Length: 85
Image (tube, rainbow, N blue to C red; front, side, top):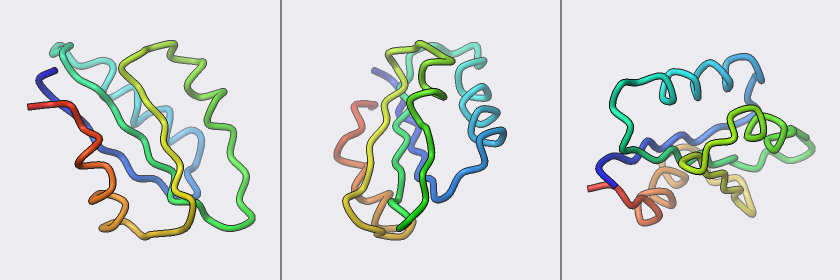
């Protein structure tokens, strides 16, 4: 694995999230993984699975925080999960 793309999200807009994922998927470079981390906003429901099902790409992984950590702590949580060089 050459490249890991880390994407913490908080209350995402479905259209923008799909476009963000497409921007990674449509690159000519193909040796990547995309780690999407939901920062667990209380009381906010979002169907991430339907978005993942749209792409059917094993390189895209979804993780959810058990609590709201904010962006910097969420990125720090993602870094050790990344398999890219």
